[in-house]
Amino acid sequence: MKIKIEYGDISQYDDKVDVIVNAWNRNFIPHKMLITHGVSKAIKERAGLEPFNEIQKKGILSLGEAVLTSPGKMRCKGIIHVAGIGLLWNSSEQAIRLSIKNAMTIVVTKKLNSIAIPLIGCGGSKFAPEKCVSIISEELNKWNLNIEAIIVIYKE
Image (cartoon, rainbow, N blue to C red; front, top):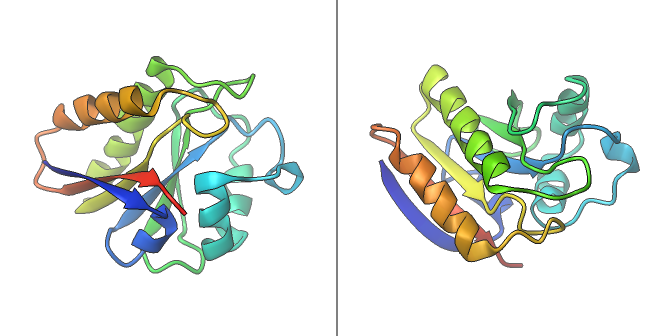
């Protein structure tokens, strides 16, 4: 596993990786009623509504659940939405670990070669960014794969 840490807008990685991860919620509130910000806002603006309509059709998600949707207008092969944010818009170490595990299961199942991952739960959920990077790295290192993973720390 080759892991890189970079700063930027994850939606701009759509031509650099097979899939982009969207730090999402558990689908309690329809995306059309949410005021997205940070990572989700950037992805929605670039991809359009199609992937968000697809994820909404999945109904309520379990904490850490990962769902692959189309990329919409983006050039990557898909978007993996992870339910890394709980009922009260909070995140936890468990939610982040489950999100990465489930996203990587999709990567393996679909035989993908690269993934861009944002800091899950560090926006509105206020999870500590340094701790999040550490958790994501630990989880990625559990996979003995020949793929590239880029942890993208959001920066406009």
